[in-house]
Image (cartoon, rainbow over all chains, first blue to last red; front, side, top):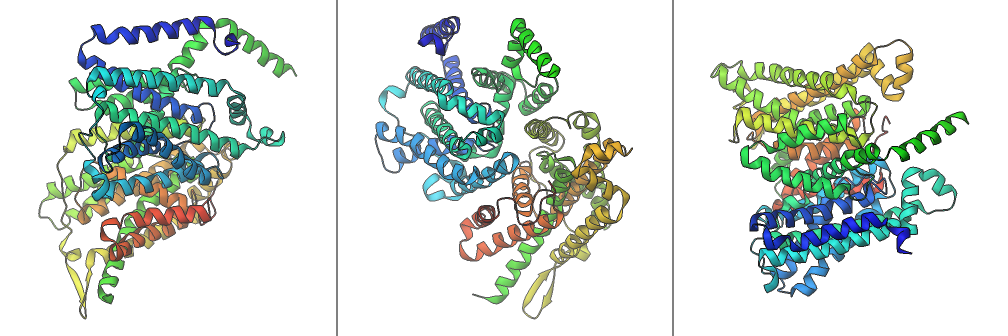
Length: 325
Length: 292
């Protein structure tokens, strides 16, 4: 039964990678461990976006809102209400999912660009409230030195915590995509009219997808708090939303692991490039434009085309048959 | 509530709305004709403001400095836009919106760093020329001259855009291209250059907006982040591609923010966003008809 879900060699590769990541802290310097934790958080965020963007074909323009809401919820519950981590951490994703439900319920009435615009409007409303509500959120200063449980205060502790949570979330997302619901979602992406015609409630499915993505975005937000121990309004700003977009594009948005790769590349590049130059965003911008021109399917999409000649030959034959008809 | 305070806040809001309209009109024009949501539009506006600053600085005390800046800054921005359009964007029109958005985001990232490189991260300011400085007094009520200037200029720009798109050949072609670009091409019109012209007009308006805002606020890096999001919202509530919609949207946005100052000064900026959300909940596709 398991074979139906995962090809054995991919499973082996994943397990090997996980094992390597588990043993990594024993050998790697602290700075690298921290950067890799950041990659885990960012990768989870990018994957949660890809769930709706790549698999759902939904123009989720302001995904960072859910990330920020998750992070701020956990941070505020800890600092303002002094709640313990085992309550405030799960609260983050739940509030994010609730935000997703609210924003999504209004947005799914629209499609494509209008959907994205309305989401930016609603998301910016939340951003501006966080940005202005100094008494509670600390305004543009954010909240720093958030007290965390003992085991998360070391870089190693945070690394393992984030690794385990991220791995579980990725596995869950994989199951969701492979489930009947995931298949329906992809069908809606490819042809919403036809799905409507065979009796699928398109908006209903899209809304559920948005809520799920918001939930995992919220998890990523809480993970951010564990790694950085601070929150700031930039987490909900639309520029970040577009950066997540870039990660998905870079990795390849019709592939499952693409966003992980994209996030890893962006975080690594940012770390390296900002050591040498103040103009790191130029590097990102140039990379983005080159991608759009030469690699629109992303690294993983390109690799899939490149290394699977048989599949593409079959595709070609299929297309020829279609053309002949 | 003091009526003269209300009136002067209203005036501030209207003046702000005029600048927002000019920038948003450029955005919506490009959106209507090219179907490109140009995220770099805010950066072009910022370049306009910084260029105006430099020109005013170079010309020093010369009273004509501001007026020259008002003409030259948009032209500089238009030149930048033309290079972007001919060099890169014109190869991408067949792509989907998502790619075009990300492309303009890439341009935005590069332009912002260029601004940082050329002008640095300091705050700059421009003094308006003498004729627009200070204010009239009407009884016990002061009217800033610069606001009056903006209130005259805004409708002129709207009128100019209306004339351009309804009375000129270019405007008629670009409206046709917005509806069906293939058909326009079939009729033997060089659509590519129509698109270039439309993009450049959009950039001119961004530059003009930047030059106009220069005397009213401090110019700094990051001014593009807020204006672009505001303009996107204005364009959306107005109906994508509709110039008059952009005018209505800008008025709603600017006036609601300044009137918000009366009730909740700290959260004044929340009001326009709330208005946008309400409008979009009632009319998800905007107030006026979109050209799409």
